[in-house]
Amino acid sequence: MKKLISLAILLTFSGTVYSQDNIVSKTLTDKDKKFVTIMDPIQFADAYGDAKSGNYGRFGLFPAHFETPSHIHSHGYNAVVIKGTMINPFDHDKNPPILTPGSFWSVKAGDVHTTACISDTPCEFFVYSNKSFDFDVKK
Image 1 (cartoon, rainbow, N blue to C red):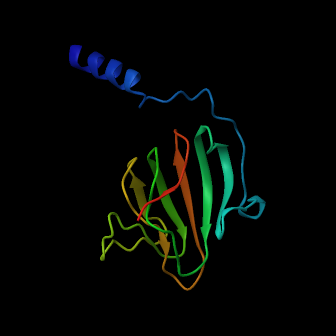
Image 2 (image 1 turned 45 degrees about the vertical axis):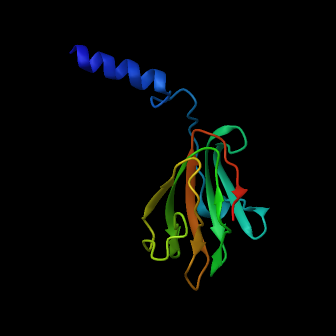
C-alpha cells in the first residue's frame, strides 16, 4: 500500500495525472473542421485547446507526397493517422515504419525527425499534447 501511495504522489507531482475539469462536452463532425494553413502547405483544424499555450488536440492535413524538413519541438506530442499513409522518420532513418490509418506515433521533445505523407491522397492525422507546439527546422 505504501508503494501505491508513493506512486500516486510521484505521478501527481510529475504532471502525468491530468484533471478532467477542463473537458468540455462537445462534438466536431468531419464537415465542421475548419482547416487553416499554419505553415504552407501544412494545415490544422483545432478540436480543443490552444497549441500555442498547451493542452491541445487538433487535426493535421498534409498534401499527398509532402515531407516536412528535419525539425525538433520544444515539447513532445502524440499523433494518430486518420487518412492516407505516413512516415515519421527519426534522425534521418532511411527505413521508417509505414503508418496507415489507426497507426500511432509520438515524438519526444528535442528528437530530430521529419513527418511525411507518402500516399497518392492527402494525409490527415490527429495530434495532441498537454504542452505547447512549436517547429524548429534542423539540418
